[in-house]
Amino acid sequence: MADELKTRDQKLAAYAADCISEVKSNQAEFKSLVRNFPALVMSNGLGQALAFLKAKGKPAHEQLYKFVSEWVSAVVYGKKGEDLLTLIIASDSLKYRRATQETMAIAGWLKRFAEAEF
Image 1: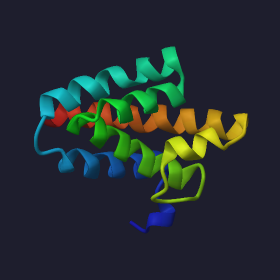
Image 2: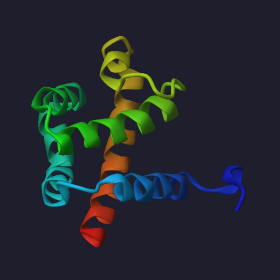
Image 3: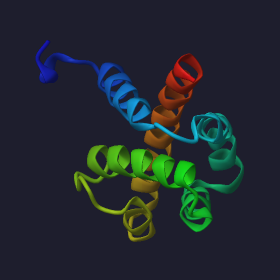
Image 4: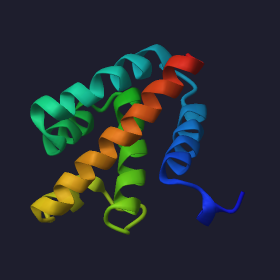
């Protein structure tokens, strides 16, 4: 199927599946982290949740940050490969809300695939 014909959810699912296949070690820790990440975002906000992931510095935290950052920076900001925390700090409230929505969407797919695979 041509990429331009895929729905947003199909693209999210494909990206999440690829991400989960990259998680080789710390699978149980990653699964637990991704299961709790949406609640962390909702209770603390996207910026603080991302800062938490960066500050922890553990492999599972780094991977989740990388997966979310790659997706959201490309989809919301059109800046693939740029650091999401840097982008949201400099963005307006509309972009911040959109970034939060995309984060919740990708986190949902990552959670589903982690539960299925691990």
